[in-house]
Image 1: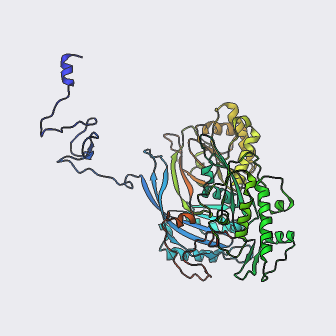
Image 2: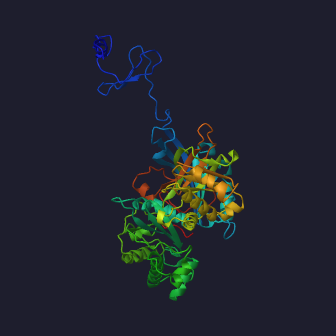
Image 3: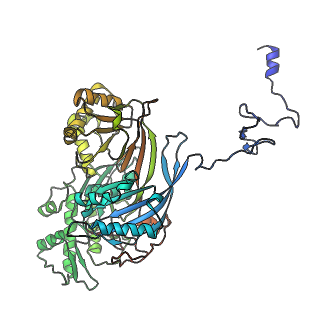
Length: 585
């Protein structure tokens, strides 16, 4: 460098009044139209304007597109009770990129409906006209219109989950089909929800670098659900007819309700059950003990005895590997953990005690669940806006957009167990876990890919997918596949060229999905050959959160829609009694 160059490179000391007496980060311009500029960190006013410049515009997070506020409604329709809850959800973008995910950072309950005893026109058919009147009345009392609600979730359980009822109830929300997630929750999906809501999935995440395996047992009024969680995922679920309210009694101890499974247990013990007659304490204890024995027959993964086999709703647990912990959720878990001592006219106290007294058989510690009483969905408010990778396969543009696809995320076999048959089994288990009947509805299969994208690996996956979806393929329904790494195009090409030639499909990649997600796929962005994906995840709140003051809530507004409502204002009733037992499903 010449002496002249060196001289010109020396920092100059500005004269007072002519410039700043501090350094700057890079060049900046004081010309009209520049809205402020950035100085070095030592400057007292990091973001500022100078005299004669327009004032710097401070954008709020909302104006910058980094925060959104949604009004969400959760509608829970079950065999025994139904209710609504309106919530305000605040979501913030978690990164700088426009495709970064939005997550819920604040939520508050703005209105809770009273509890409706689910109306029926006969023993199994829900009265949707009465249900519709109830919902309309709740919207009116909440001073809400359908236009005021941006998103929501409708969950059907028990009798409401049966095909004829679910379709009729879903029709009530047809005009808001783009806003609402409608989930039909059979026993397996309820088990998955309980595993997430209780924190069992989170607790199965790596500890000291090693994943854990946690069994969650969700015990309610009519059923018990099991979930095997490992590395933050639900591997398997099962359900059986074991619950606290298989026999219900009034304050005087007289029987008011007998479920079929309760009658079966009584018959096995030679106990007579009659409506209006008392059930002696020793008989209640004997029934609770036998129910607990059947429960642990499944939990210990022993060969099923005759009675436990009859009580099973699903196949028993197939997982035979070691467990690291067990946890309990559901209404009966309040007694298991000693959080509740009151008697609500059922077998809850005795069944909880019987379950806890036998837990040592499992030979693992008992984890404390983060939330014990079953979580209630308050809406589909956890949104992720993602953009797929560009290595995708869309067989024809008319397949997009596609809205409200339920995500099924199979737990893929490891490299040593990887075969066409193991892929097929993983997909089938994923559908079973969420109570999805193959071919009955459009779904998105979401895969976490952890292997080299070799020809043989990709072909094995493609053939396993085809074998797992025979009804979907036979009916020429388009396939939707989502991968977390960039093999969407390779798998799509393999399927449409070699495995199921000419079949329509959308195969995208670099999108993160999980069970309990629903997705909207936008039209392909032609300039980048990518697909925008909106991910809607179910959002939960629990009675425990509300008791702890973590979710600010309004007292339910009392009103009369022509139905009997014997519940008081502060009674959180998630298909539950005051102690949290879900009603029999």
